[in-house]
Length: 106
Image (cartoon, rainbow, N blue to C red; front, side):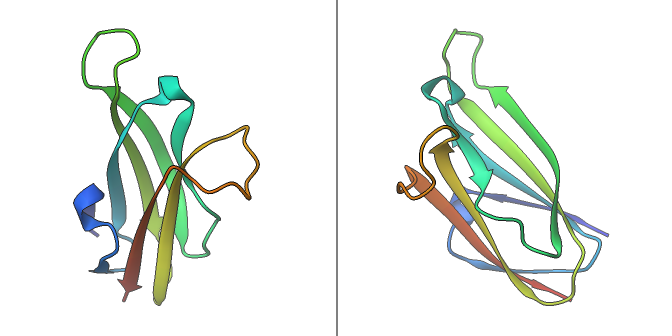
């Protein structure tokens, strides 16, 4: 079982992993704007196991990095889709930004 880390530069790519691996996704975020990274929809085989924010400085309102962690529990090809959106806005509204990764899990 491995810990795999991806960042914004991996957006739109494919990644090979194994069942039992943990995927960590680090993306820039400024939650004081109301926008937060969220998984678009639950995907069987990709289980959210962690969500943390680390500010880049101690200044009030500073941006930082969102760390989302997922357990990979199915042997197949799966998409992971994340959206940067405000939780209170209509889900039909386009997100400010998206992140997508195609996982080939063996």
